[in-house]
Image 1 (tube, one colour):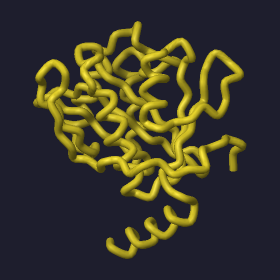
Image 2 (cartoon, rainbow, N blue to C red):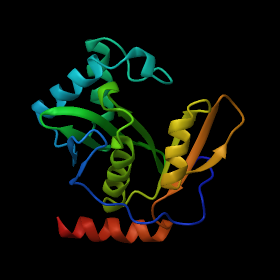
Image 3 (spheres, rainbow, N blue to C red):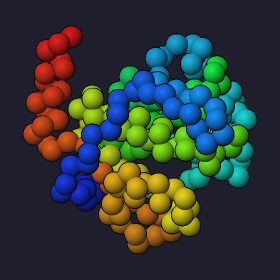
Length: 192
């Protein structure tokens, strides 16, 4: 059990993927859950291998194909939730929820060729919808405080700052009431 703080209020419902939209550059984008196929995995390797090093934050995504593959193996594990923003056969972005105690840590990445087009907003909403549909109760993230675009996006989505004592902000969001997620998870397990 961590000492992280989360809002008391539960966030609104987010749309579970798959979802589709036209970005600000008139590109057709589809948000879909990661399916674990070799093709999906290799497409993410290519996206991260061509990721602009200037857009890396807090050391991720790592550089170099070997390190990218090792990192992806960790965040694409079965206990994680992942969604990909697809533009045709190319990955425009990727977002993940990685388990951390009684919550999940969120990370989101939009390839530089697709930034400032509304993809990040739709990608994070799709990820949170995927998390809600799977009974995730609480989500947290850290963001460099100077990254105003990201901080603004997270606040717009409903994240609240829980710790602002360093050069990073820690933000949290409650997707389900504690007892609600347990009931939904049990119901989902019974449907399998």
